[in-house]
Image (cartoon, rainbow, N blue to C red; front, side, top):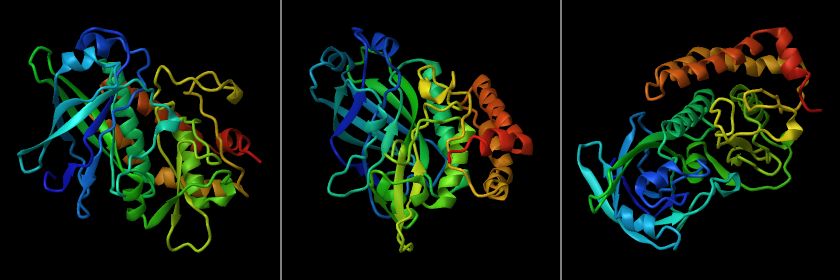
Length: 350
């Protein structure tokens, strides 16, 4: 891995909140936990950081006290980024970091491009709390669930990042995050090109992918998406399709019932009190047989989805059980024809 991944740009963006005067208070007093760290790599053409399920270990060494003291000045600070190689060595390079007081807004999930080189994004929380660490791990699992159902999905890889004080005055801090496949990398893998087209309707997208995606969003209890304005959706046109019927690929699942973050509050217009309440947001299909075609996909992959959660030991037992119970509730719906009609078919949009 170390021979195929190198740093693309010299900035690592770290989102910090709060007004604390030291490392602990910065990470413990963040007013909004929904933050993201962005880490950009250059990928050589032959590299594929998602070829393994093993997590990658990264270290970031910098002067923590100075960084915290000057966090509001939008000032760059020198840092050393280390990437643990699969061969056992450590690749290190000098980078610069800057504190950014930004929320992880849905509209800000943009890939960083430089000279059209592939990029990756690292997502992690900056709040030093096990609860938020579990949020990250659950969202990672949601991405992996969609990977099981279709190749037309963003792949992810787990990252362990260790923050080290270069002056040895602050204790080091380790967190898990995950990298997300770039748009360019995904497009090449599925032989497509990314497009941006405001106002596109659900019926203008590739229907197999869209109907599968909608049922997946129902499974995870996510209503925070929209095809028309590409809200938490990316569109990819397949190169071998002469007609513009792009694939709708979802991302960003922290507002889903499956992840169940405390800050995920559904809009009033949806008529639900909690993101744990499922609401089907797909358009009506022609017949019950059409719905069953997509339901069968979830039935075929049922054991894989359950095994994925059961065997992910980084999630504590309570959160694994919570995810499994939520899966149970989904399968109780799709395995019951009466509930399929009431909660999916009758709830569809005309």
